[in-house]
Amino acid sequence: MQITVETRIQAPISKVWAAYTTPDDIVQWNAASDDWHTTKSSVDLREGGAFSSRMEAKDGSFGFDFAGTYTKVVPHQRIEYAFGDRAGIVEFVDGADGVTVRSTFEAESEHPVEQQRSGWQSILNKFAKHVETSQ
Image (cartoon, rainbow, N blue to C red; front, top):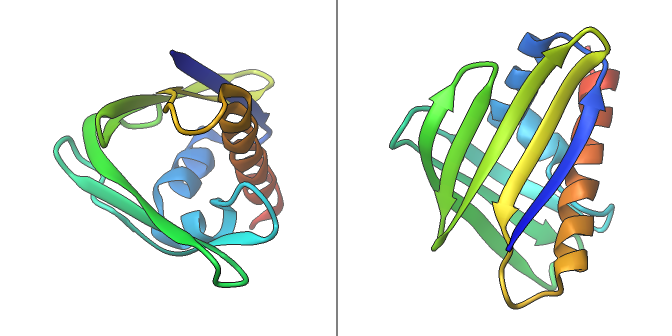
């Protein structure tokens, strides 16, 4: 089953792309709730390149690495990636009313679909806020 979440961001495509693909930015927005944070991130943005983000509960009770490999990169348009045995796509659609960022990924079986959708949407919402409020 695939899940799709999206947001619209009032910023130039170059700023949106940079914030999505730069480790210093990723650690600022990549969390589904305020009690979680990303402590480190690495990006090798090319086909075959690896990415990783360390996500941890702020109270130290739990953490995990979200990591994978880029399978296709079209600057300012599309990122395809594999993580574990699943795949995802992030699309960047530049329009007159802003940039739509759409993330589609294969759901996993451990957590309910709605919980996954909600968490990924929350991360995208935090990303949009980060882009729109940063200099």
